[in-house]
Length: 459
Image (cartoon, rainbow, N blue to C red; front, side, top):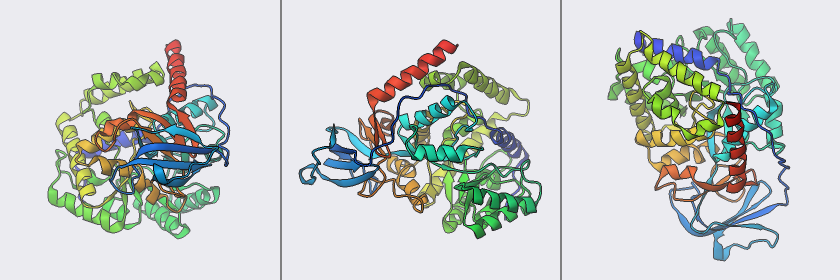
């Protein structure tokens, strides 16, 4: 049976959910460099790498990986792999080749926004080794953007997109929920996004129709629905761990091991996935340090006005008379306990950060997230798996990717150090390959410098 969430927890959760319902991507202007479509005949060879295939947790030394077009075609010890004469060779000696990562709760600006702003957001993801993005709030025109990205017309991760949100403002009856599901299926969206505000009848109508038509749905858990019912109705992803603390916490935000274990069992038995977004929730609950947030180096790629707004919103939250810092800290601690228990119990975890958001800069936010997942008790391998092999499993009906094996999509990151020893080393790479297109470190840095300079001039 679902426990009614304590009033203090419900109030904080509702305030955050309402803020996220109206999320708008940061306006960031840029010019796009020439980015021709990857030629199917282009061949690259990553020679003598330390291979982090993510098939398992082994590091295989002295391997060579050959890519043609957007596919990995050969993987093996360097002495046994034939490299085509026409291949562009990339020396991987002393470097670690791993699959590209995924942002499984990301946001893509509206296609009606400044086109340069849209392209810059997508570039920031790719520059940080994110080669797949599951966009979690659809706008008109995004489906065309998805096709442009797939065709290589812009530098972009592969995009899988949720349609416009199902929420208390967009849905007013079960009948309307049914028609909205049918419309999004016909339009070609990849999944449905659930936000707060749906009644139980509206949610059930949405879920039943989605299951009948074979479209996945995920996101938040409306208060009238509750976590256990959402699991039973087939909701596939629970983003931000939404509904977990609300289902079992006491008035002060504390959870018991028995209750956590029960929810883990329900999650595992249902085959549901969770997308934690741990770092952002620490910001939104006010338990992070504002001084530290304001010191993030990646803020140079964001307009100063946006950073000022984020700082003011943080201060307003923690200075609100109804803000309970003890309960907030307890909620964050409970979230850490729940994530560890879900991972230890065999629940399926997907990497996500909810960027762009407050102090959550596209691409860079993922590297903040990695350390919080490790702090929750996950191993570096399990964390990286949540953004690679697990994502490939989630999207297995769409394409083959997430591990370094022949036939898989050529999404790769050439890290300078062993990411299984030090999770932060994922951010220190020598280049990224997105669907067979190589972005060298020098090319990435040049574009990042242009972005930073532009924002500095705008101040």
